[in-house]
Image 1 (cartoon, one colour):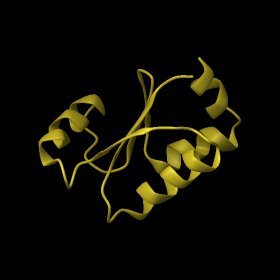
Image 2 (tube, helix red, strand yellow; image 1 turned 60 degrees about the vertical axis):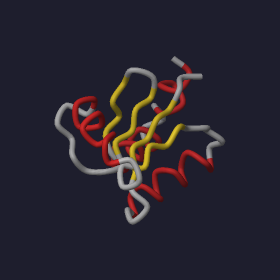
Image 3 (tube, rainbow, N blue to C red; image 1 turned 30 degrees about the horizontal axis):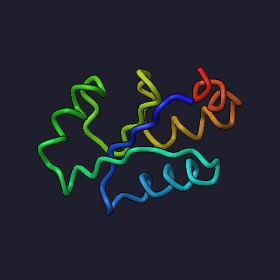
Length: 85
């Protein structure tokens, strides 16, 4: 299974929704709280090709995007394949 990394903020409802989907599917992930670790925000922006909002979700080397993008992958039946790649 590909490693999953998600940049979040504790005040972000979309972050909570994305993490809920991952947890419901039993997918472990590494979380980077950019509010608690502000020095990591520039890293997130670089990796996300300029994306400044949270969540920013990565599966392996693939930048998924945000919460809506993650749910779109799940609805399209593509999330499991990306995780397994």
